[in-house]
Length: 98
Image (cartoon, rainbow, N blue to C red; front, side):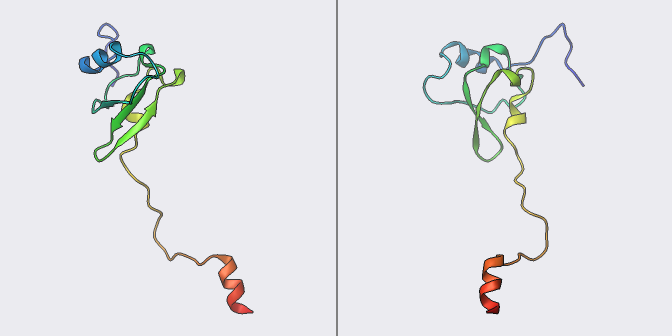
C-alpha cells in the first residue's frame, strides 16, 4: 500500500542529518539500517552502506533510483543454484577419453 501524498515520502530523520552534514561523493559511505527510507533527489551522488541483515552493501545513488527504497538495492537473499549434480568441465572429460 502506498504512503499518503499529504504525508510525503518517508526518510529516516537521522539519515537526513547525515546527508545534510556531507557533500556528495566525499568520505566513506553513509552507514544505515533504514532500508525503508525512500530515496529523494538530495541523496543523488551519495554512497550508502545499507545493512541487509548480515553485511553492509554499498549502494551508489543515481537519478533513476529516486522514489525507490534503499532496501531494494541491497539483496537479503543469496541465490545458490538449484539441486542436481555438478558436471565436470568439458575440457577435463575430453582429456580423460583420449
